[in-house]
Image (cartoon, rainbow, N blue to C red):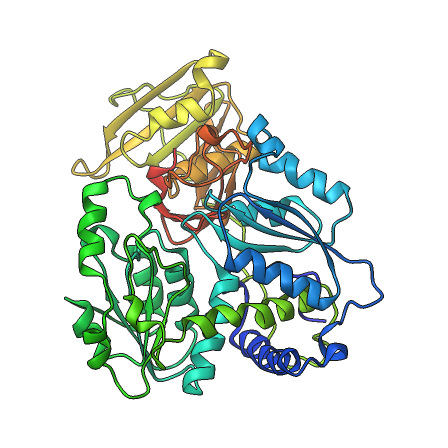
Length: 498
């Protein structure tokens, strides 16, 4: 079965066929729940299935709808809502909390956590399905599925649409996930409005544009609302904003009022992941009863959609799926290329003295990268004899390059991977008896881990050492000299991570 034992940690882990199948099943499940056809939704009846709801942050709709969905399905639930009264307040790590619920033989984990990438870490750590109910400012994929369902339910399609997203586009994980999910459908025009300090992250905009989405940044909420089929309004998250003066400015320009509604199209729908903050509302109270206000229906769709997600992952449905199944893109992990050797006479008229006997010469590095290599290869700790410098290339004095020579040193495969991760494009010359015995050209590996000092640049990532979660950084190649954090998705230049 295509969905059995699958995690739901990110929306990009599902194909378009899989997403549409989940939405089709959600429509059937919603009808069964409305008509109280118990046998059509109590699919776990007679099976002893237990869901662990681990909510480190406040939640009403997500936690309650998951709990109701699990109970309607016929599951038992356990866990916590907020860390008060738990061992988290005694300093327990996420890793150890997960270990406990796995030891208690739970069948799945539904988790909300303040750190970006925590859900992907949990899925990698435990042997049961993990559902991401929101991880920091990163993603909220189960919200996105109910959002897609609500859009299709209201408009009858998910293609050829103008979608507006307004409010907190920087920290709003629901906004990120929805934009990325919509990029998988044809003819999407995305209209964005926010305070400049809360703009959609560049990497999200670049990602959706690469998939063919038109992205328009609008000057006002009224201007945006008049041109879209759906407006996805979001709350300004005061708790995530470092500058409260910017918060006051942001909430002043983001209120959807009756006057705004008058400018909208006849088929327009207003959505919101909720809650609406009564002290700084993003939607005026007068709108709640308007027929184009969809957010109550939207929240209610959380029960059938999450019931379907649980049922699919636990193998209670999905055997009739026909379509493309998600698989990780194939990516060669080869990073070493053997290059031809051209022996040259030893020269004395160069800026650093060559190795005369045995050792290794790392050449054609990025300028000034040699200091980083000295650290990650522990050259000084080992008390190796070395020469390091940024020099002019002898073949082209206009180019400068980094170079590191280490006497009587042979790099292991793991060390070669580290060198390739720190300074891709360099060459490694193995010197034996005063001559080059191997010449290796290194490129950026597909997977980068265990590099001393490596760190994700996202200050909210679970792999950051200051959070004491003992999560080792893990990067994936995202371009010639670019990497993506496996956990939080942050895109970085290779020079930024060490």
